[in-house]
Structures are given as C-alpha cells and as structure tokens.
Amino acid sequence: MRRLTFLLRPSWLILAVLVAAFAYLCFTVLAPWQLGKNTATSHRNELIADSVDAAPIDITAVLDNKDTDSRAEWRRVTATGAYLPDSTALVRLRHLDGAPAYAVLSIFRLDDGRILLVDRGLVAAVDGTRPPRIPDPPAGSQHIEARVRMSEGVTPGKDPSVQDGYRQVYSIDTTQETAVLQQPLTAIPTGERGGYLQLDEKQPGAFTPTPLPQLDAGPYLSYGLQWLAFGIMAPLGLGYFVYAEIRERRKEKALTPPPTETPTHTTAPTKEQRLADRYGGNR
Image 1 (cartoon, rainbow, N blue to C red):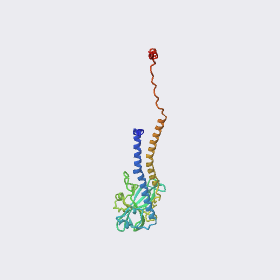
Image 2 (cartoon, one colour):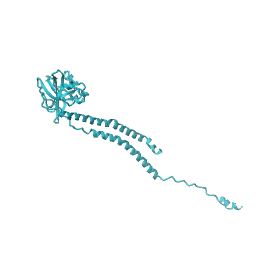
Image 3 (cartoon, rainbow, N blue to C red):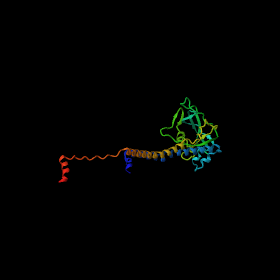
Image 4 (cartoon, rainbow, N blue to C red):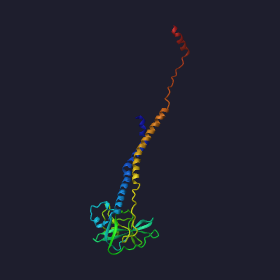
C-alpha cells in the first residue's frame, strides 16, 4: 500500500475529482441530452412521414378531442370558415431561398365561431430589410387544407412591435398573438403548447409554404454515444496514468544501487603495545 501513497498528493486528488466529475456529467447530462434530442427528432420525423400519405381530417375533430397529445402536430387537417379582415401580422427573421423573409400570419374564423391562427407562408423582404405590401386574404367562405403546428414560444427581450405599417413578432405563438391581434384565438391542443395552422401550398391566401424539416435524425445519436464513450474512457485513462506512475517508480527503484557499508577504521597499535603483545606470552 505504501507505493500508492503518491495518490494522496494534491495534484492526483484534483485530477481524480475532475475525472469523476467529467464522467458523471457524461452519463447524467451530456449523453442523455443528445440521446433525448435524437428521440425527439425521430418522433417528429415519424409524425411527418405518417402525415404525408394520411388523408386530412376536419380540424374540429382535433379541437374537440381534449385528450389529444403531441401526435396532433404535423397532422393534415381541413377547415371551413373565413379569414378575418385586418388580421395580418408578420414574423421577422425568417428565410426564403437563403434570403431574409417574413412569415405572414392571419386569423381564420371557423363556421362554428372558433378562431384559429394561420401561417399563410413566406414572403421575401424588400432589399432584405423591410416587408413588401401584403395582399389581404380572400374574402368570403373558404375551405383550406393545412398542417397542425405547435407554437414556438416567445423569446424574452424580443417584444412585438409595429413597423412599416404591420404588426410584427419574432415567433409564432398563439398566446402572444392573442394579445397582438386582439382576438381570442383558440389554441389547437398539441401537448406542451397550443398550436396553429400552417397552410399547404396552393391554398386560398397562401404564399410560399414554410418547408417541412428534413427527415433526418441528425447526428444526435452519434453524439450521445460519443459522450458515453468519453465517460468510460476518462476513468480508464486515469487508471492508466496511475499504472504508468507505479511502473516508473519500480524502474527507478530497480536502477538505484543499494547503499554501501562504511568500513570501520581502527587505531593502529603503538610500539609499546606491539612489544607487549609479542613478549607478553613468554613471561
């Protein structure tokens, strides 16, 4: 055990604590974070893939189902009603073909009186800095097809404003747009947050549709497995360094020569002592 006492030195203790903390974070935070993103992305891709070939259902079937979970997102639906006049709002910081753009929001009143938020699609910014003139949605009764989308939430510090004659926001969120548009919007049940409708292409009042996400799980699974590997490799690396230190100490001990004994020096006898020793035995 004495050869392991070097592990009690401050430098080794600090290294051991850092390795233990890193491994703990890998197993409890970093790997679950990436694996959770992989699970969420795979779930989203599954919903999108299922919705591509699924026949659309009436939106009232989704609204009336109080137990609807997050699988309602991306579902294709139909809605019958009319757009409300003077209900346009723009979402800033969007992109269309790699250039700055705005998403156009409007309100759609169903025949039963409920009011829904509709994303009509994207329009390119003029000179990359300001919105173009936005045509009003068609008047009168309309039958539209759309996808259910979950609200994006709001970003603190990015408040709604009025610029260039349009109400503008930074995200699509039914709670926020209820206040901005001053209408009692009905949030579509989608699980975590209330949802809205995203128009399909060639629908009444639609602009360029917001593209669907790529059906790719991304690198999250690989990243999660890498963090697990790092969490295993870190303690193994520390163990290797301990073994290497012990091996080097053994080599140094083997190469160190043993201490030599110091010869004992005696005082030379005097002449009288030698004569006494020589003749003393004859007396």
